[in-house]
Length: 330
Ligand SMILES: COc1ccc(S(=O)(=O)N2Cc3cc(-c4ccc(C=O)o4)ccc3N(Cc3cncn3C)C[C@H]2Cc2ccc(O)cc2)cc1
Ligand SMILES: [Zn+2]
Image 1: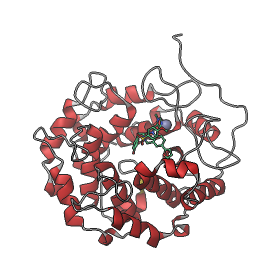
Image 2: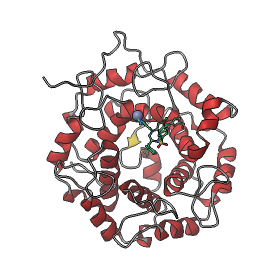
Image 3: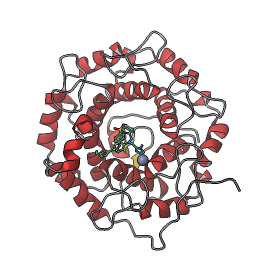
């Protein structure tokens, strides 16, 4: 057998410790002087989206300080219309999406100037249909997903050229059926999620070779049960989400050994502090905590988690409330 980077699973597999994960996330957002919290100011808006979505999946959104969050988001909208990660930071499509996702969950899209957000997103589209993340112009297909997801949540997809956006995504498709961040870039599970998600929102999934891509995705599963993001890489719980959400949209989730993956994810819990890490025994963080929970929600309805929409990575009930119907292959 070829050498495979993988890990040995610990012998005991803990059950899902939901109360501990809820306490971890609620505490993370409250003691603001704590070291880790201060180190993530540059991505605060996304950190809040990760924590609040995880709490909502566990039925704990009403334990959060909605007024404080809404005020913070209002203070992060810049004159340009874009939203920044924290106050006094530059706006970016990443944080504009996170803010719109949070406001959609709180059903509070009226606290920001929607027309100015739409204009900020529209201004990011390039002549070739791609999107720059901010005014400095870096292009990455991740930002195409941010633009399309943001506008669809606001019911304003009319503001951009969808056909050209889809053309650019297709230029990022590789011979292995996967997608990279730009034309010619190597396939990576995170970028595949962005491209499949964009095509799901715009109704262009028929342009994907679902069998070839589905095969590449299920090849991410290792003997430990965990999934990696590219061949030869170690397993990591966040790839559970990127791979599973894409497979679900492509109608091929059953190609994964669910039981083995569930066991891997459960061993990534910190049974003392709560939270999930990328691999058993590593440091936990809100990012991996969200993606561990969203993966479990996709894998088994018997966990007492709300169901997650694979396209938007938001609770299904929020997508239903917005009347959105992202497409899936059956
Ligand atoms: C710890 O090192 C990193 C490296 C990259 C990043 S990132 O912002 O480019 N990003 C998101 C990300 C976040 C965290 C994290 C720690 C604490 C918090 C509080 O909310 O969030 C940790 C990792 C991380 N990464 C890096 C990563 C995850 N698994 C493997 N790696 C290398 C992902 C990275 C890219 C990204 C993914 C999704 C997204 O919506 C935005 C950015 C952040 C920290
Ligand atoms: Zn990870």
